[in-house]
Amino acid sequence: MSISRQNLSIVIVTLRSEEVIYNCLNSIDQNIPVIIVEHSNDHLFKDKLELKYKNVRCILSKSNLGMGTGNNIGIKETKTDYVLILNPDATLEKDCLEQIFLSSKQLSDFTILAPKEKNYINYGRLDKYLNSISLDKKLNYQEDPFKVDFVDGFAMLINKKNLKDDIYFDENIFMYLENNDLCKRVIDKGENIFVIPKAKVNHLAAQTVDAKFKYEVELSRNWHWIWSKFYFNKKHLGLFWAIKEGILRYFLSIIKYLFYAMIKNKSKKKVYFCRASGFYNALLKKPSWYRPNLED
Image (cartoon, rainbow, N blue to C red; front, side, top):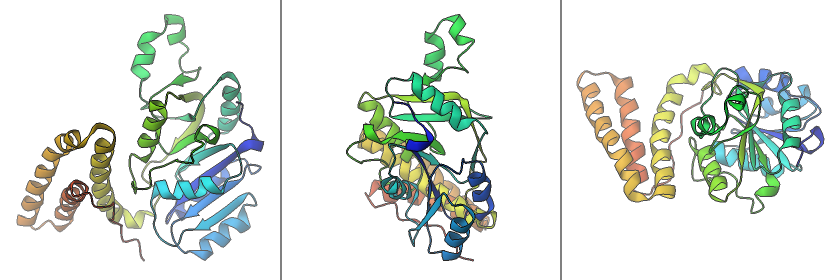
C-alpha cells in the first residue's frame, strides 16, 4: 500500500489565512495536486493562489462551513487514493513526504498516517507503546512508525480505499475533535493509525486566521470546544458521560460570567458566556451554530 506523488493529493481548508498559506504551499512539492477549500466568496484570494501555484485549485464555499465539512468537500474532489489533510499554518520539512512514501512501503495496512510535529508530540498509546517494547527498540522508537489511537488534525493522511463508505469527517462538528471522531471510528473498526516519526512538520498552532481577528476567534474556540466535547462524548460514550464531564465546567462558566459582569470586564464576560452557551446548546441537541465575526 505504498504512497507516491502519483497517488497523493493535499487538502487545505482556509479562512482569512493569507498570512500563513503561502509558507504552507511553498513547502509542498508542486508536482502534487492541492485543493484549497476557502470558507468565503473571496475571488481575489482564489485568483492569486491559482495564478501563483499551478498545482493549486481553490474552491470557494461562500460561507464558513467548518473544518470537517471543508475537508470533506476537498477530499471528495480528489482523484487519488491518498489525501493529506493539512492546516494552512503548517509547513512540511524538506523530506517529510519522502519519509511518508518510504514508510508506507513497510506498512501492510493503514487507514491514517501522520507525520510528527517537529517540536511536540501528543499521540494516543505512545506510553503503552514504549512500555510494551524491548529496550533496543525503545532506543529507536523515534525512527520507526508506531501505532496510535489518534492523531492531531493539522496533518493527517487518509487512505480513502479503507473508507469506502465515503464517511470522512462528521459534519455536525464545526471545529474541534472532528479528527478524534474520525480516528475513533477507524480504531473501532479494527483499522490502523500510524505516526511516521521521521516525517516532520512544523505547526504554528491557532494561527490559521489573520491575527486581527484574535478575539473573535477566541470566542468561537470557547463556544465550539465545549459544544464539540459534549457532542463527542455523547456520540461515543453516552449522554450520562457527556453531562458528567461537562456539567461542572458549565456551572463554573456561569459563575465566572457573573463575576466578570459585576466588575464590568466585558471581554472576559463574553468568553465565559460562550463556554456556558456551548454546553447549553449541545445539551439541548442544538446544532453547532456559533460563527465568529470575521468581517473587516
